[in-house]
Each structure stands twice: as C-alpha cells, then as structure tokens.
Image (cartoon, rainbow, N blue to C red; front, side, top):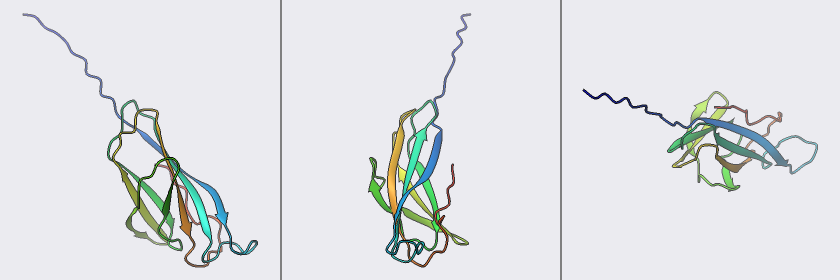
Length: 130
C-alpha cells in the first residue's frame, strides 16, 4: 500500500486597529470643546496575519456628546457607519469592509465628529485597540 502524507497550511488574517487624534476645530479658542466644534480622528487597520481578510468589522467608540461620525476618505472610504448602541456615556459605531485586505496591507480613513453638547474634557473619543 502506498501512503502519502499531506500538510495543509491555513493562512489567516489578524488585525490591529488604531484610532488616533488628528486635530480639532474650535469656534472659541481657549474655551475647550463646545457645541459646534469639530474633532478629527484617523482609524487605521493593519492586517498583521499571513492571509487576506474579508468581510471584517471596524468598531469605534465615542462620547454620546458627539454627532454621528462623518467619513473623510484618506485614502479608503468605508461609507457611513452603522449605529451599534449606547453603553453609559459611550456610543458604538461600526463599518463592515468587504475586503480583501491582503496580509501586511493597511486600510485607513479619517472621521470627523461635531460636538453636539458642551464637553469639558479633551478626550471625548476613547482610544481602544482590537
């Protein structure tokens, strides 16, 4: 009898997600964030795995005092976010990206929030990595 052995290698994606503060547009400098001010953030997803990623979900967490985020393509554009829900004083937004995002590749876009109510703190969008 002949016996052959086969080795199967499964390539899988693995993602790191980073949200970074870019800038803010204040209507009244020196007054802190107030209703009508805009804050700008960048979301960057890197596929650190060894296979392409398909149909992945990016979630963002932001203060309930901020508007629905507006995507500013840079260079990618996942479109309008879906509202996931509120937990305490934090809203969760998500985007589904069809892909593929190749191994080692980056998917990046900028988002703007408008402050809907007076905020006394600077960190209105908590940073979380997934």
